[in-house]
Length: 281
Image 1 (cartoon, rainbow, N blue to C red):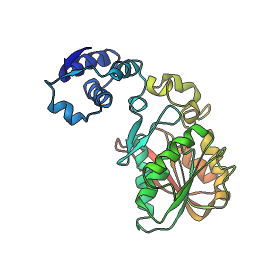
Image 2: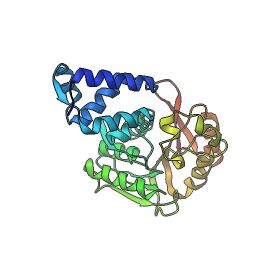
Image 3: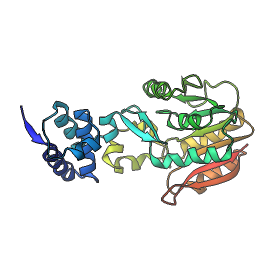
Image 4: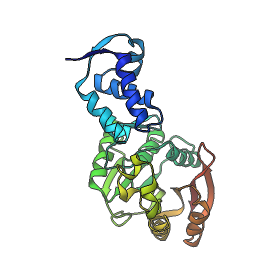
């Protein structure tokens, strides 16, 4: 049985995570200890000199992070749009960049009681659809994904946030099993060129689902497919909002225009990078 102070536990883990190349090792060490010990980070800070028994899961958690497994996979959740989404290796980690799309859609429909029907293509954790629904109580939506494992996570998140009555999730290869038309279509499709995936951070290249990353040779395969089907699934003057990768704005807007979509906006993320293309049919 090993007893050390909270500060010693954090310091030891910080050194190991720093050596593994983790950007913010002290912050992550505290998060891992808090998770393993069942306490908040604030509690750890306030009890830095308190001696505690080493939590059994802590060593395993540090080892997993040393191997560059995403922190969110170890903790089992990731905050997005002020909601704590359950995540695992079946889904793409929700990222702050994707909040650009949520904000852009809400700005297009500013009335809280707006009644709209939304389709989320490649829903993953459900973060886009559920975040929008959390802000628009009159809206409902369908999230589709080819992965049943991803859909299981999305359904759990809908239950977690009290949105299951307005969010349906179905297994489908893109739009193939969707019925009817929608006021809004959103998607964060795979957009990394195949050859570039192995050069991504280990957390992404080795641990995130390749199907949610691989956009084909030029990273644009999914956009071509979505653009081709939008006239069938989008209502007249309906909105499409697509997340894009860095430097893809010109190519994606061209693909959408060629598919008959009128571009109405190009939203930048907090770093000033074009991140979301908005169009209407």
